[in-house]
Length: 42
Image 1 (tube, rainbow, N blue to C red):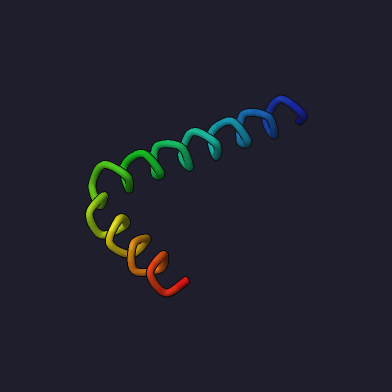
Image 2: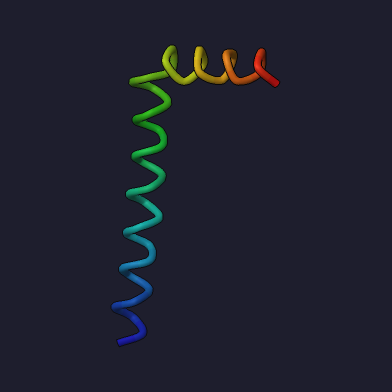
């Protein structure tokens, strides 16, 4: 049972990492413009 939970956690971490990398590579312009807009407001 403990092994199954650890496998699930590792899988979740990999999914989050891959999703984050994909977001950074696919939508970098949108993210940067949003960050710049936020920085100007602050």
